[in-house]
Image (tube, rainbow, N blue to C red; front, side):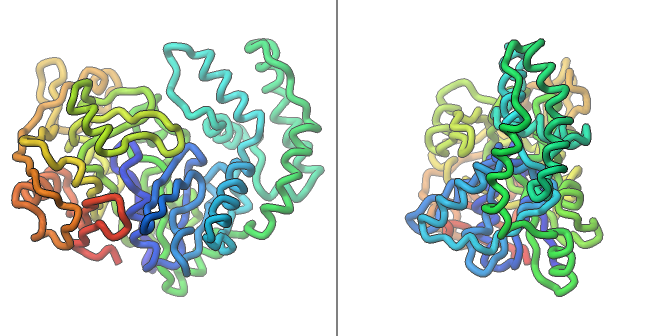
Length: 427
């Protein structure tokens, strides 16, 4: 049962799309198991660049079946637009499977997300405003709309009425907005039914049968470990579980079927949105990382906050996910620095702390303790093996591996599909 989980080991944007795409040609199914169109992957194939927001990266690999699992929240308009865009570029999207149990991001979810974030002012979380959080809240409050509801107008109408009873009270009385008409929402959602129908499937059954037939299934997280609703830097997190455990609930596959968990690490650290970030840089080095690394959110369009590599976070990700391997991305971005700082611990109120503090207060006050590693100036983008790397680059990778607690099995040395060094096979 070769089931692999691939997830971000930092705050997201680590290059999961490149890693998933690299494995896509060797796997039978690639499954998104959480999040929505608040995530984004950039995949470079030859001279073509693809920006994916909701679709699994495996959709670009011929022979691979892409799956949107039950744990994902789906904006139908975004999904159909993304499919249309790929079709226009000659990508076959006909094999996509969409879980009938996935929840729908409704127009009122988007409205609630935007007005509540605006209302928070300086206390805002930094959401994408795409309705992700309110949709997950509806799911937990048992007033959510699922994909399968699009095919029963009576049930759909009842559920939209139940959801809007409270939301219209909030929108009109608290936020001074117009009430949203039930009929308008129902009509819009029903308009997606026929277009989505060819993709809707019992994905839990499909995936479990595939594993029983020894097919290779890759589960792809949408965001990073430190954005996990339970294990991230709460409240500056997403509304779901991108950690490894989320793959089981978000796809309907038991934990005993997972054979490998691969964490994606950027050779430095970035994050988008508000929240603590101990190694964040506000100087020329930070600007250089942002410029050279092209650090701009695929989905949000926002500049990413940049900082040096944080080994404390990497160790934490290894622990909470049970990581078996790391895929280190964007090593090439660090070319040209004479010395490269790596955060090996934190200083909190005069104490040295080598593990991630569980206290939100402590983490907000954490200051990085750096170890300086020698840099390199040679172009590494053409390296095909670990021995092709400059000695100092090899030493940097080995140091990160030792500090992080799991073997680095692949290294990204450029944005292209082939610009990857594979040290150990993931399959």
